[in-house]
Image 1: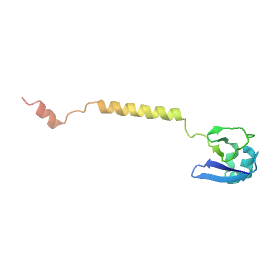
Image 2: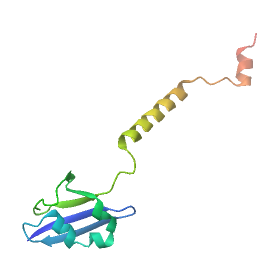
Image 3: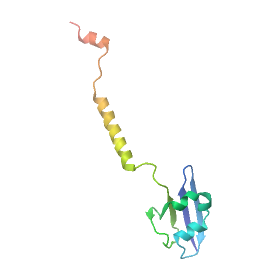
Image 4: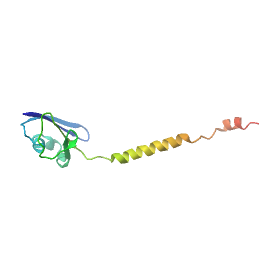
Amino acid sequence: MITIELLFAAKNRVWQRFLTVPKGTTVSHALAQSDLYQVHPEAKELAYGIFGERCQPETVLQDKDRIEVYRPLVFDPMDSRRRRAAHRAEQKQNTKKRRKPSIAASMIVNRD
């Protein structure tokens, strides 16, 4: 018997279970034995992996493996990075602009 961990990050909380399964159990069998699909039916259509690496349903599990079920990304990470970089560049440009002196300051400077 081996012990494995199943993990799914739902929208508002993390679902986590530890299972003891016989040696030779595959990823698909472990997911079917867990109650993941009853609690989160949307997880049936999602991709999964072991310790962050995608795997096939027939992958045989080892002791202490962690099966992770992956949700689709909400946004593209590269687009997000581009938006942050553009925002930083805009902020940098705005700080370089010289402010107009106040009326009082211009009166002092222009005094003859």
